[in-house]
Length: 175
Length: 175
DNA sequence: TACAACCGGTTTCATTATGCAATCGGTAGG
DNA sequence: CCTACCGATTGCATAATGAAACCGGTTGTA
Image (cartoon, rainbow over all chains, first blue to last red):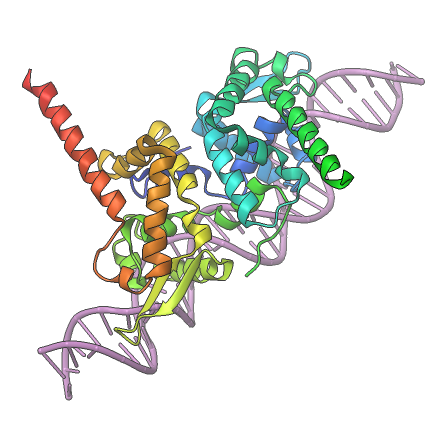
C-alpha cells in the first residue's frame, strides 16, 4: 500500500493518507473507544460503517503502518488491532479537529465531551493520554484489548469534568 | 449544500466537511499562497488539480461557508475567493496536520518550511497569522487579493527562520 | 454431539466520486 | 479585429463507496 505522492507538502501527504470519510473515524474508535476487534468496530460504530469499508480501511491502515494486527490468544479467530506510534501521535490532530468541529458544526453535546476535554486539557493532557495509549496499544497490546479498558487518564479526567459541569449546572439552576 | 450528519461527533462531522483529498489542499493554497482567483488556484497548484474538481470544491466550500466569493471590480469576469472566519480558524488544524505529516511522511524539505515554522511558533504565532488572515480576507478582501500579498507576519518570520537555518548550516559546515 | 451464536471478513451489484481532456461563451487589452 | 485569458462546463472512463447477503470456521452451551 503506497500513497500517491502528488507533492511533498506535509498537508497534501497527510490528506493522501487520512483524507477520506472513514480512516480518522476508525482511528478515533480504536483510540477513544478502545475498540480492538473487527466486530466491536463494526457494531458499536456511531456512524454505521459497512463491513466491507471497515475491512478495506483496516487493511489500508495496517499497510500504512498506522495500525497493527495480531492474533488474539484467547480466540483463534479473533484479531486484535492496535495503534502504532504514528497513530498515537495523531492525538494533537484529533484534538484540533475536534475543537474546530465543536465550534463550527452541529455537534451533539454528549459526543462533544471528549473534544472539549482535550481542548481544555491542552498539550499536557495530550501527553498523558498518549502515554496511556502507548501502554495499552504497544507495551501491553493484548492485555489492553480485554474488556472495556480505556485510558485511565482520560477516564479520570472525563469523570472529573462531568462532575464539575454537573455542579456548575446545579449551581446555576439553584438561584 | 448539506453534510450527511451520520453522527453528531465533532471528528466525524469535520471529516464529512473536510474528509476528501482536495478540500484542505485548496484551503491551504488560499491561506498560505494567497491564491484568490480560480486560475491562480488551478495553475499554481503543486498537485495539479483538475479544473472541474477545483470548481466543484470551491462551490462546495462556498456553500459550506468556509470560503466566500465576490466579484473582482478590476475585471468583470474575475471572482475573488476569500477565507471566512471558520476557515481561518482551521490554522491550528493545519498546523497539527503539517507537524504530523512532516514527522511521519516522506515530505520534501522546501515544502515543509511553513509546517516547521507553524510548529515552532506555536499558538502565539497562529494567533498573529490568523489576525493577518482576517485583515487580508475579511476586512480588505479586495485589496488583499492584489499581487502576491501574503501575511506580513508569516513572510517576516519565514525569512527570519530561513536566515537562522542558513546561518546554522554555514556554522556547521565551517568547522 | 448437536447447534446456535459469533468470528473476521468476502462477494455482488448499484451508485457516487474522481479525474483527464477538450471545450465553452464572454471579456480585456493591444 | 484578434489573441490571450476569465471562470467554469461537458463527456467520458475509471475508482471509490455503500447496502445487503453471504462465507467457512470456531466457540460456548445444552
